[in-house]
Image (tube, rainbow, N blue to C red; front, side, top):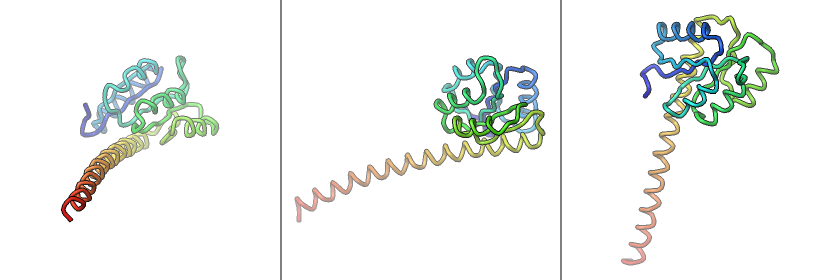
Length: 161
């Protein structure tokens, strides 16, 4: 199931952070929000439906955010991944970009307007990747059909000409 405004997964071991972001996004953006305080539970749920954006905290006890987003990428490669952290350092950003294919790195405390904009852009990015994938699939089907017609034409020409 997808909503017109997109589905956003939030993963942070701090329930207050999850509740705050969830409430804000649902009120201000209309996105459907899937809240998790456990990265393990969040990973288990991936694959059940299309997720447009995944926002995950860097420092969590079960699994760090970069590892979580890396594993999430394997299950939902078109989901846009954002790392949320109170520990801003360049190495974490580099690791996240290289391992998890991060779209953005947001520091706590976040600016609500900036967070909403980042989520909106991330959802749109995910939708565009999905649409591109669908169009490429359609093109492959048309290509295969044309190849079949080409073979039919060649057989027809050999037979009748």
